Image (cartoon, rainbow over all chains, first blue to last red; front, side):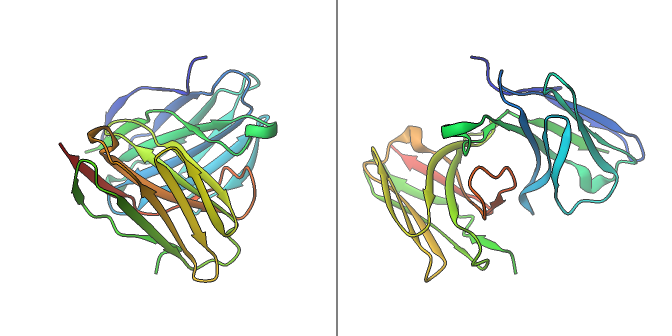
Length: 114
Length: 112
């Protein structure tokens, strides 16, 4: 079974631009969440989607948004990029039932804002 | 003050040593406690998942939770160079929650 796939792997943008990151969860998983990882703040929860509905949201500004499609694939968008948005963005998915507590993370998208 | 505190290290030990990693937390509503391992340029992978206070053992890994002290630990016995990674503690209020609160992570190096 393929793992969580994130594209692109690396991205370089300039301040003020916007960016869209993509995540394909493990086949059969309907829950997808996004995290931001920086050296200073560590891993911070951005938002969670289940069956195309946002179920939970972290404490990030409205410039950060996401969506989930009917096939469970998810995208997150950051508008008006700031230097501080440089980070590793991680997507995770989970299934349901007995192993539903286990989050499977992708390798992330490394975003650099210049 | 962060909700979850974890010493970022780095921690360097010889092969075969027992490693002890720890986190403290302030939110008494946390009931589920996890340890993740993250290799360089990879996403975190779940090592241990525990509920409430007590111990859980899985091979060379033992997780301990002391809710009265708001303190969790991960012990690695017979440490191997392949255990070299960043170890992150994480916590949630609900089972199966995708919204986890992570510690800063401890970078561990096992020297052959």
